[in-house]
Amino acid sequence: MGTFGGGAKFLFRGPGTNNWDLSFVKSFPIREPMRLQFRLEMYNTFNHAQFSGVNSTAPFDATGKLITTTTFGQYTSTLPPRQMQLALKFNF
Image (cartoon, rainbow, N blue to C red; front, side):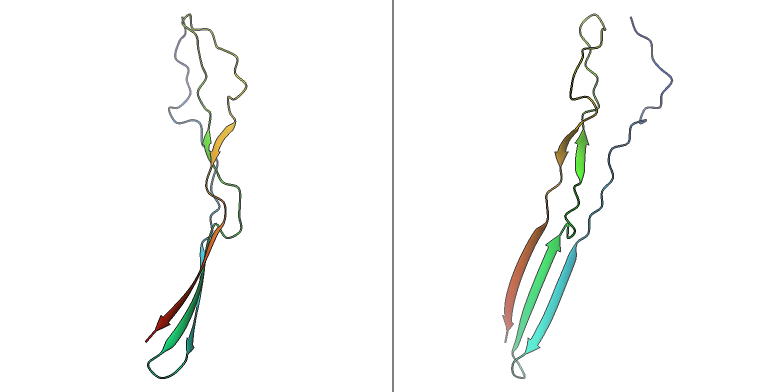
């Protein structure tokens, strides 16, 4: 059978994230009580690829032998791509 190794419990660190969210707001006065507001909101502004999962499980069979797998250590999922929304608001 196998024995426990000397590695730490959380030895594996996943990929980091580089996420920038930006918002631009501009108000345009029309008359004294009325105002028009334009908004642009962007999530993951620079559209960096952000991997959120890595296959870190090494599969073994019933006898304890390591099963060869092609997905070990590969990225399995990503965070959403850039999202943008525009809004126009009329205040009176």
